[in-house]
Length: 73
Image 1: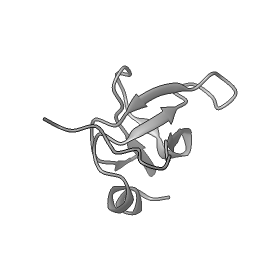
Image 2: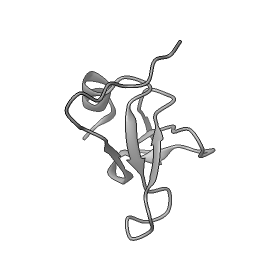
Image 3: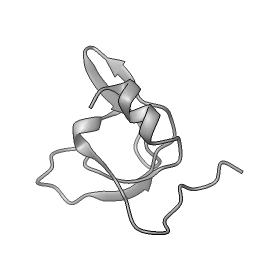
């Protein structure tokens, strides 16, 4: 998924499972803190608890019935 498609579907503060290292490592339950953008050809997003961008291929949105993204307030 490219950055524009991600941004159209998932607003900032979307809850996600992120895999900052490899997908074989345990995922981190967190939420996005930026819109996605393309960095050197790779779509990435910032998440709380991690200093750099994480490739969208290593970020899974948490989709559960009744789950809403965190409020920016």
